[in-house]
Length: 418
Image (cartoon, rainbow, N blue to C red; front, side):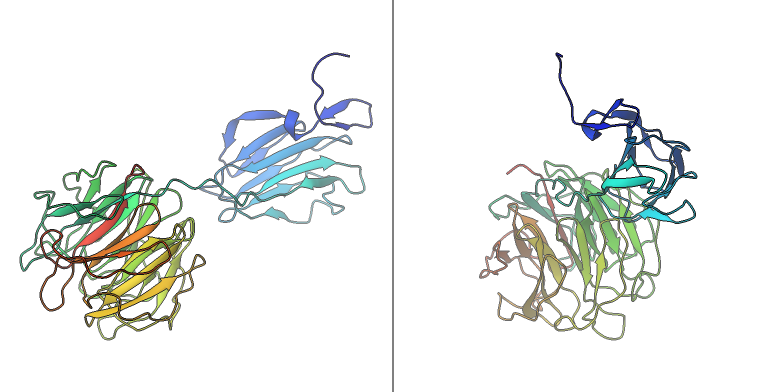
């Protein structure tokens, strides 16, 4: 016999049925809430928007095989359910609930006989999903010198801060910024002489776009961070009091409507990404007292309940990712020079003190793939100093004279090119 022989499973009829490598794969991505599948096929199941019930064939022969794959890594949020359609599944009849609810899972089932029915040959989870390349550059933007400014300063992949670029969108302060789309950034909200809902996108070459208006509730004193793959989240802030709302940002920079009720209302907080695709908000105030609580954000943008007792309570601090999967909170009211490292599972460490000049209302960004930079702020007078953070979380001494001194600005990483 000539030709290529694939791995096979022998049916009772003597017909050789191809295994997963030789299945017929559906050309259509299943996105609906129900789907009926056939033996000998593989299917991509996308549950981004809803759960999906998969109905198996009503009759089967020994060796019949079906493969189901989590197309968008969302089964952990929206499960799939197997309806075995009158046949047994692992020895149980079809009154039993069969659910698969793990991100990145694939299910390879084979029919045995009437007693055991369909049996999973594999139900593996692909844990090592590809990670996008880290951003290499950063941008500080906006703030106040006593008057609101629209200045930005680019940061190269070595942590060198460039001179001022002026005239980039509406001047404002107490805004937030985050990376999005893998290699771009977005500034959002702030005080422009009143609460603002403006955003300004930043291209992967560091060019700031004109204002986009009307994106969620106008507010200031919020924070922003990247999460998931190319996504971002704005959260918390001050409207006429501290709020607990968030706004998700798509991988094309589209800001969604408000989501309310996500942890304790607070403002003057900080946020950063950590791990491979997670984020964390931390510290701030509720209008009465400083807070030392954090709120984790899942890779689908769901904000968790408060975690308390993580370092010194304070507001007006900054945060950034470093070391590829860790993060750092730093500085804050009242002109503190302390930092708190965040592990790659979101555990916030105890205070580390004496890391550069104490100040508040500063900003921070990642840069160089695995490092971070804190910049600007006020010690009682606005400053133009920065402090680099190594890929092990060590904060360096002050570097002064980097652009116009100001406070209440924001910063974010952009560009995957050094």
